[in-house]
Image (cartoon, rainbow, N blue to C red):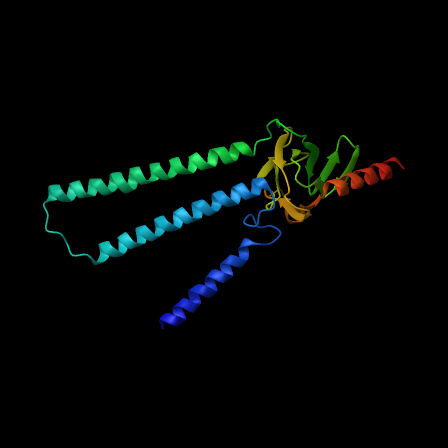
Length: 236
């Protein structure tokens, strides 16, 4: 019986682990921002799992322990200790630790000026139901296709033509809303060449499911050649 239970637990674990990879998995990062998010998520998952185990163990102990022969005053004192320790101290420490790690991670994702190097600028305009991608310096546009250089920070200037959308490339970083009349900036970068799936993460109407796009990361030389090719085609 125990072997059967162990097999079922192992099978369930392997099944759940299959969701950690794939074109839209935040747990299969391919960029520095996504790696930071994944690391923070795993840290929160581990701590939450430990807290759950401890709480379940305490519950199991409380259900099976023998009643203590103590006075009402001592019982109230013991209860207060648990309330202060488990209800105030533990959440305070947990939130403080989370903020200590989370705030620097979030700060590093901001589109702040770089000390070295340049940032590639790409403008994204959301529509019902497609993404208009503009390369302002080169002067051409694409639809639902984005090309970026590898190992280079890219600032996406994101806006919307109609309703609120949300721009998200799970394997490269976090999401940001596309809001009519406002331009939000999201900085992403890819560690390696490849194609990464993106999608609208905010329900925006009946065509929401079709608001998908692809981000193709190219090596520096390939990206420059691609830009030259697109500029030539645009000037014909």
